[in-house]
Length: 270
Image 1 (cartoon, helix red, strand yellow):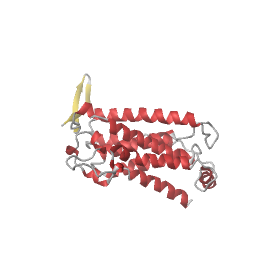
Image 2: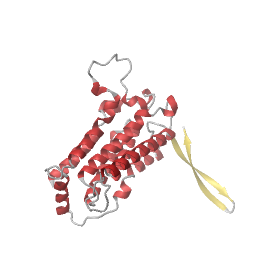
Image 3: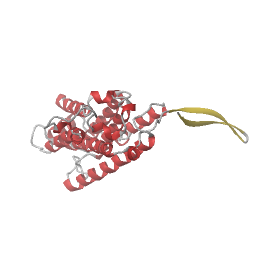
Image 4: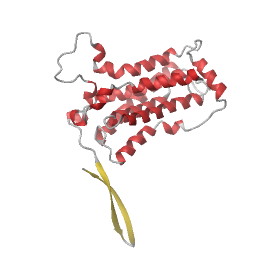
């Protein structure tokens, strides 16, 4: 059981390490658009020859590909790191476990982002571009996960269907967590920590519910993060325009109605 928790913790730490701490300290005003997240800083000259690992696409895909590769490696059911080894431990310690919480928790990072916006916390992008990024990420994730699910034809641990690999719930949760991390990282890294913790919890529940193997969860996390990173990498913020100040405040005002009074709630941009 200890080995099981260590592996989940390691996966979470790898995900949180997907962004260098130094990048989170760049002020919002110095970033022209989200495309610059993976670009080399201007004015520093050419990179040394052979520094391929510092290229923006490599930095965007490194951690997700590690997670996907780890998932593929766990497909070997006969090794100590394989799917059957962990499933045996789970079934021994949590027999008959069942919950539907994972069906809702996969979207909770979006609720975290919405709550932050409600309280006037300024995200990296304005609301329109954030919605566009979410739409692009969701479309890319859905297409890739569905394609892999029905091409690999893996049987679920409960033998309910042949679409186990990768976990769509986990991919959705880690995609949403990556969006939260990218949008709020300049305010505090703890927003990302909370979102990724929720995502890790979804992956854990999928295994406890006997719906997915360890390989499915690891690969699902990779596909979710990769989809978000590629969406940011290709986004131009309204075709090159700088993000607008999306901050503001909620205002309450009395509303006079025929036969009585009410309360009007509106958002006032700054």
